[in-house]
Length: 110
Length: 425
Image 1: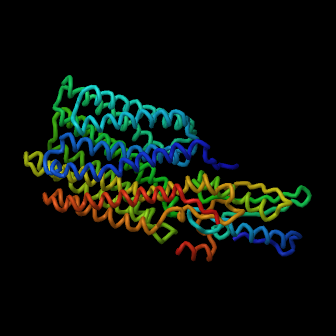
Image 2: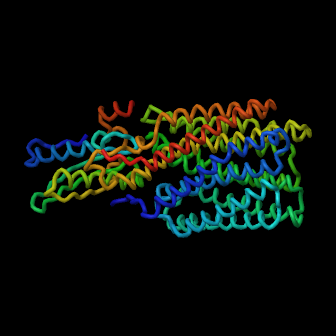
Image 3: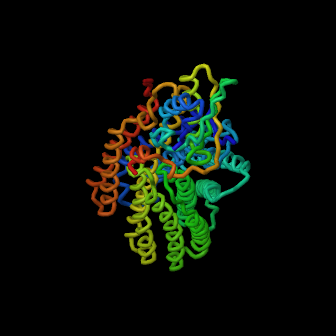
């Protein structure tokens, strides 16, 4: 699961972003994207007022890809009105089921 | 690098139109069958049964597959659909042709109506095939899924051309062989070439996504593809020149091995799935696969009895056709509709607010209680109807038809619920 250094100056803010993103669900799996391990990094750019989300999808050309990316953008815009959301889809490392958190596994009844 | 394909603005209307048209045809099947129960005990080559078969295979199965293809092609072939205008023209011509065609089969008027209907259907199908082929041409890296889908389209084309030739043959009798022989080729090009290959190609890509499978042994698909196509080609050549004979058993065996390869792939997807709980939609898919297996088991017996010139072969053929068209294909559609339709509705209705507000999820758009009842009524239909046909018990056939009617009503209601539910939370 994504984690941040407590010494990071934006630690508290990043945790808020993380909590907000925990409300974004994969519409098919009905598990949130944090517990699915889809979010790799959160970068806060204070000067330009941007929040960059580096994330992946469970497969390239995932049928719900556009919906998930859109939901992440909506979520950031809604919770952090002063910031602009930028979602970067990355494919390295490739997502695998090992990235699902224990909570996510429980929800999937794995 | 972002590889997400947003839903095209025209997609919703074209897909929904296909789903609704297909649902109307599905609804028509039970009354048509009820009027033709007496015909079901006889030979399969008669007007009412031909009308019903085409309503099911074209009006129900093919129409919904066309719609689903427009939705899924961007996902499976990983590119945007070539033309939505072509898709509209395709379904318009196809559906007009279908109505003409079914009517002229029902009253058996093999003249201008049937010929025009056939040509309109062929044109609609051709536009669909061209659309998919041009779409596929954009792909830089072809894969096995694409091979299955494109080859299925070629078989669909072959099926339609053969069908139109047979329609004109009613009036002008120019085909060099027996009409029933061409019917066998036409039916198997449709069932084995179009439906089977397409279902394999699409399911191979979507099942692991829906189940979140950790293992996808593509190698089984790479065996399945040549085996099924080789079997179909050999069946065409052998049957055309020599009719059904002992070699047909070997050809059927090849096809069965091809299907088994796909089933192994499916089994591994199910076995390695992370999402352990199976919903009713996936249960419908499993039932569909089971019905395909039963139909395949029946097939060698049909050949055996036909070679013995035993009339049992005719009864078994009706059971076989019912298991495939009303069983295998219908069960798959009845389940997968509620995997695909809610997504397109959800994307249209909720995607713009998802993440900022709590919205319904795709699986909450349909009524799961109705879907459960639908599954039970469909199961009762296929058991009762198939046994009734096999044992020649009309009462069972009638019970089956009533269950099919209930299934259709539940299905259509749930499709409408999915389309009309409008609750923002």
